[in-house]
Structure formats: C-alpha cells, structure tokens
Amino acid sequence: MALLLLLTCLHPGMSLERITYAPQLSSATLAGRLTQSTFTLEQPRGQFSHLNVSDFDAIWLVLAHSNGGHQNFTAPQRVEDTPVPANFPQAGYYVTLRANRALYPGGQPGNQLRVLRVGNDTRCSPMTRGCNHPLPGPGPYRVKFLVVRDRGPMAETEWSSETRLQQAEALQAAPGPQSAGTVAIVAIPSVLLAILLTALLTRLIYTCYDTCGSTSISGPGELVCMRRYNTLHMFSPSAEGGF
Image 1 (cartoon, rainbow, N blue to C red):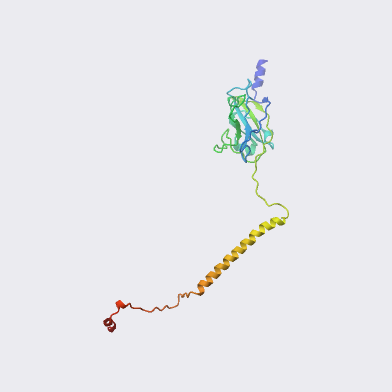
Image 2: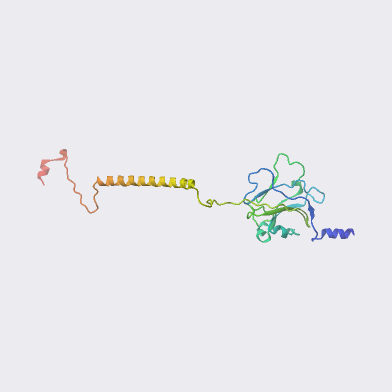
C-alpha cells in the first residue's frame, strides 16, 4: 500500500498541490507600477514555508494571456520543456523570475520595499529560459507561482485577477461642432499673423523700389566711360610735347 501511494505521488500526471494564494499587484504607490510593458507584484512572502516545499525547489512565475492562455497552461514535466517568452505568441504563456523559498520569507519586510517587477529585463533574449522580457502588449494577463522539483512540478498557487497595462493614447480633436469661443481663439492669431506678413512684405517692396529707383545700375552690355585725370605733381611739359 505504501509503495502504491509512493508511485502515485511520483506519477507525472498527478494533480499539483494547491497553495491558497493568488498573486496581486503591488499596493504601494510606485512610479511605474503599471507601464506599457511592465507591472509590479507583491512578493509572495511566507507562502511557501510549509514542509512540502524545500529550499532547493525552484519557484517560477507563470505569466499567461488571460484570453485563453491561462486555461491552456500545462506545467512542464521536464526542464527542457519550460516555455520561454519567445513561445508566448503561440502558446499564450511562459515562465519567468525563478526564485526559491529563501527569497520569500515570512514576517514583516522591514524598511525595504519587496516587489516583483514583471517584464523589466530588456537585456535578455526571449529564447532564454526564465528571461523577464518586456511584455508584448496591453494584455490582459494573469500570473501564478509554480513550484518545481527535479522530477517535475509539485505545487502551484491560484491565478491572479486580470492585469491590463497602460496604452499610449493619440491626441484627437474634440468631436462635434466647435464653440464660438474656440473658433475665435483659433481665428484671431491667424488674422494677426496675416497682417504682420503683409506689413513685412510691403516694407520689403518699398525699400527695394526706393533703392533701385535712385541708383543707376549698368547692364552687362553697356559701355562705361571714365575720364582720365593726371595729378599735378606727375605733369611734365616735355613729356606732353613728345606725344
């Protein structure tokens, strides 16, 4: 009977131990608590302190798309089958942020703020196991923690509620007819700018006409005659008689 119970526990298809805990967004007022590619979770402190979880067990964060990805998630039985961020478009889920029980102790966290920022690593490759790659879109997403031993997964938490990331919003004109005040605010600067440009153009034309009308400018085909002058100290009667 004991042998049968042991074989049942080691069977790959057995159901995982359920930890009654659901991950949740950080309650602290943080800059960047939700961005276009990341979100911040509370650390699951003290949730893995029971005897069935050892310090050598890996604790992964499973991230799945809420539109079907979390329902299709199957805990990998081998390390080689661990889904990576590059699998997310097809599978709808992957695992990241590997930790162990010692990193999530119980008790008060003290003065340090202990959070998990999902999608915060821009340097790792999406093909790398455990890469905390920026999230590819606004979601919605769900997460849970998965405890894995060498022989396979052995425990998991509940799925979190949906998390939606921020989205960039394009500036758009207000729909419907514009009020008279809005039209006046837009029209007055345009009229003043037109008057200023007209005054500058008029001044430029007047200046050009005044300058060009009082100065004779020779064209390239005109001959220019210049009178020859001899200075007094260079004049010599004997030289003049020689010509």
